[in-house]
Image 1 (cartoon, rainbow, N blue to C red):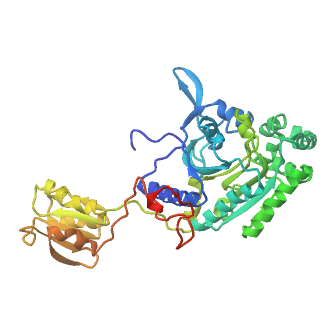
Image 2 (cartoon, rainbow, N blue to C red; image 1 turned 45 degrees about the vertical axis):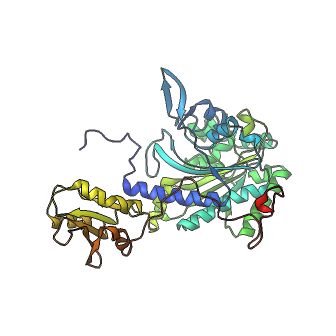
Image 3 (cartoon, one colour; image 1 turned 120 degrees about the vertical axis):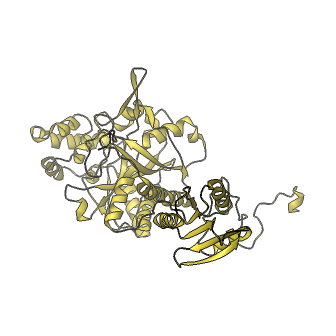
Length: 458
């Protein structure tokens, strides 16, 4: 047993797990960029009022589950329990509300909640998310929901159901709260402590209670779709029509709400349907909705917003359950070994041009027998061994051995990059900046904007 272990409810991402996370992030980022969403990164620690003011004092995220951080004895900070409120804070602080609207942002970050650890519920967990500010139109709701449905299809998740509902906007909320409060007050003595507390605060969140008896009571409550205003009803009809036109399947669930108080109108959840995840109730792999009053609540101008967030840990577990192949941890395709004993510097010098050429190269630093080094190269997953320090590898030569085909060739040092390339592929190196390869305008046409004063375009 190790002397120290990770804190309860938290875990290490060992290389295999980290590789799967990296692969998922790459897919999210590529799709986000195709949809015009730019990445934003917020601090792991925020002023706790960011969450208390936006999530609702009765919400779990802002109450009993928040990790508070003490700074010089003053506990005014908290580890972020969710992503939307910090993004709104950054949106305002950076002046993005003054930039052309709408502003589309995405994130892929760790979050923290002091919840009781259980299956797929970690105290440190990861989320990807989308936020769109400045678009009140139902099409923005449709876009983030369709993005998520297409994303899940892209990565191979099939055992999932999209659930939708509408909870009305702030103008209709008093009417909705009054009707629901009157109904649930009749069952006050039957509700558990959490739901009774919500009855005095955000009555809509009683629908989010997990107690089976409370859920049975909630099932017969007045439907929010029957209480909302005509404008809300038209907005929701446009959302469902848009999803129908895009072929995105969904089910309207009248008891669906979100666990945070800032949501208005459209709310949605993508719920896992595999029996392995439904034994203890529904597990959402992504959820979100519209929050038209959140920016103003954070001290900004009145600006509509809509977003969604998905759990990375939950998604990867669901994909493994469906047998979806995951990205493996990085392995060296090429291994440099030697029968020359103490010549580690020469091996590194041999590996250097191969790495610069784009090959993934490992080096055996030991002076073990060549057979042991070859065994090690195979165990590390190498497909090619580049061998020096043997009778064949003299006078500026090396041996390039294909460990899969079990063939080898004596090669001049000057040609080793070419020879290795006959057996394994080079890896594309990322660049800090990639120039746009396409001029504006239709295919085969000149740019649609021409500066007559520029001699190059005359």
